Image 1 (tube, rainbow, N blue to C red):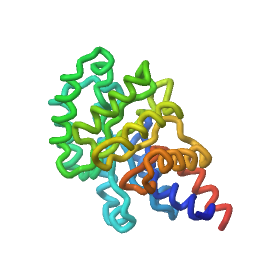
Image 2 (cartoon, helix red, strand yellow):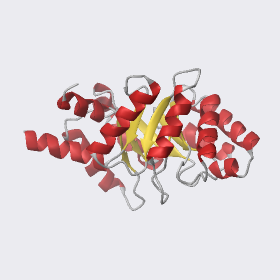
Image 3 (cartoon, helix red, strand yellow):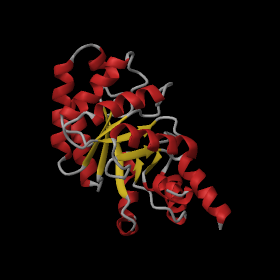
Image 4 (tube, rainbow, N blue to C red):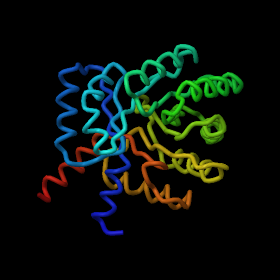
Length: 246
C-alpha cells in the first residue's frame, strides 16, 4: 500500500469528534462548515446529543458522503442508571443518530458488580436497535490488564458493535498495552467486533501505527465496519497535508 493509500485509509476510519463543554450552536455550525469544506470523508462525526439537530440539517451532505451521525451517552462518567441511559439513546435516535458511543459503568466493573454491568449492556443494546453501539470501557481508569480484558469480554458478549478505549476526558487515554489487550480479546471473539481507538490519538504516525496493530493482531483489514479512530486533531493534520499538497 502506498503512502497516499494509507492516508486515505486513515481518513476513512476517523470519527471526527467535537466534545468541548464550552461550545455553543454557533461554534458547532462553524466547525461543521469547516469539516464539510475539508473534502475528506471520515466514517462519522461525533458530537454531544444537544447538537444532533445541526447534523440532521446537513443530512443530505452526510448521506452523500456516507458519513454517520454519532453521539455520546452516559458520558463522560459512566455513572447513570440504564433507564436514564436508554432514554438518552431513544432521544438521540429520534434526532437522527446512527451511532451511539456509550460509557460502560466501569466503576461497577472495578467493584466486581459483573451482573449489574451485564444487565446495563443488555438494556443499552436493546435500546440502540439498529444503531451502531460503541461501548467505551475507559481503559485508562481500569487498574489491571485483567480488568481491561474483562471489560472487553463483557462488551463483546453483550452485543456491542465496537469496543472503544476511552472518553478522552480522563488523565490516561489509550495506551499501547490497552490497545493490545483489547485487540487480542477481539481477535479471539466468536463474531466480528470492531475496535475504536480513542483518547490522545493526535498524530498521523499514531493513527497508522494503530491500523498496523489492528491488522496484525486481528488478521483483518481495517475498514470502517471494523475499526475507528476517534480524533479531531488528527483530522486537522490530514486537512493541512491535503492543503499543502494542493
